[in-house]
Length: 80
Figure 1 (cartoon, rainbow, N blue to C red):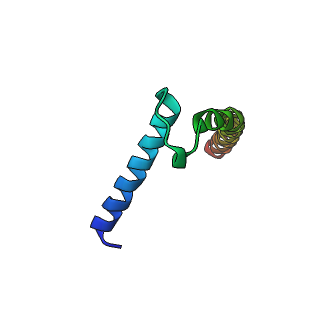
Figure 2 (tube, rainbow, N blue to C red):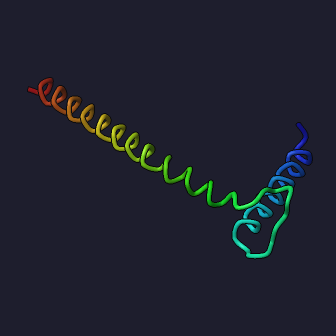
């Protein structure tokens, strides 16, 4: 795809995103085809997703550190 086409698509998405943001934030700014009060739904989704992401991130960090401890233990055994 040509870079100019990608820029145009990006600008269209930017305008739609700004319209959705303004629709949810600014009182009285209502664009019917963008939907109404999508921001409340988006916040509800984030409230459900963020704890799951934190749990997965925590598990990943613990897994990495346990693996690092095992590697250090094996390295110290090889040095002896």
